Length: 83
Length: 83
DNA sequence: TTGGTATATCGGGAAAAGTCGATATATTTG
DNA sequence: CAAATATATCGACTTTTCCCGATATACCAA
Image (cartoon, rainbow over all chains, first blue to last red; front, top):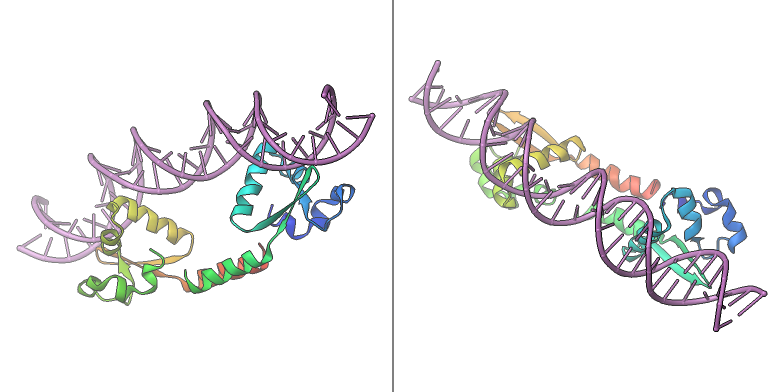
């Protein structure tokens, strides 16, 4: 999912009909591509969010998720320095 | 354990009596510090080895493990580029 | 307000990972 | 070769993670 969200336009073309890519990709799109149930994907995304790897933005009935690139940069640096 | 192996002289002082630090630290040293059973530590180290994060060198009845810094560098870069 | 849609949360069963004791293997020493 | 030591592997049990269906919540539209 994290890799998918790196190129939303390529991986979630039908997101265009759901408000575009400004705020990210909504859960249903990710769920369809993942082939997992709605509850599983929702929980997974919320875990990634709490971990800081993605950001959520609620717009109406939709929740859009997009990557937080800073977190990946930080993780990469953490592995370099601390691990 | 990976962090411990970053500074073997500091974290495993009694390794001096077991052949020094050239080849790494032997399992018993790590086990004592970890507070886990011998079998658990042995298995854990072998997993880390198969994953490429540490290298093993058998010398007589001892197995010495040391970090493979290249693997950490590679992981850090992988997170930067692919993830 | 009622029904429809999108997402979140909850509880439980299945799968995987962690940990142990027992035992096997390899090596050294007498 | 026999005993001692260091490590590895095996089988079982426990804990954690994964994933699901059911249900709750939030929002929208008629």
